Length: 95
Image (tube, rainbow, N blue to C red; front, side, top):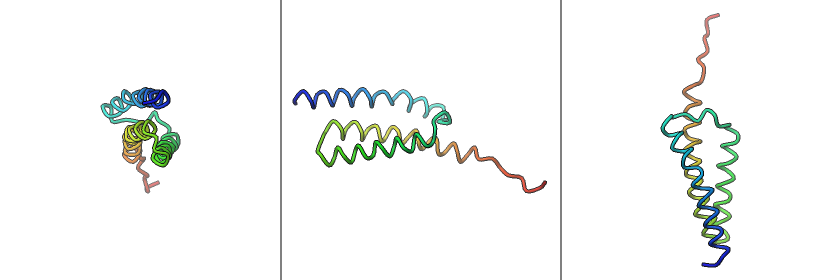
C-alpha cells in the first residue's frame, strides 16, 4: 500500500466514522427532523456519485468510504422521509 492509498483510507475512515454517532442517535430517537431534507437529498446524491467515481477509477479508499457513508446517510434520509409522512397535517374539509 502506498502513502496516497493509506492517506485515502485514513481520511475515509474518519469521515465515515463521524456519521456513526448521528445515525445511532437518529435510529434511537426515530427522528431526523433537524436535518434539512434538501441537504440530505443532495448529500446522498453526491456520495452516490463519489461512489460511482471510485468504482470507475478503481480507487478502493473512495469506494469503501463512500459505500459505507451512502448506507449511513441513507438511513438518516429514510428516517427523515418517514417522519415527514407521519407528521403531515390533516386538513379539515368542514369550515
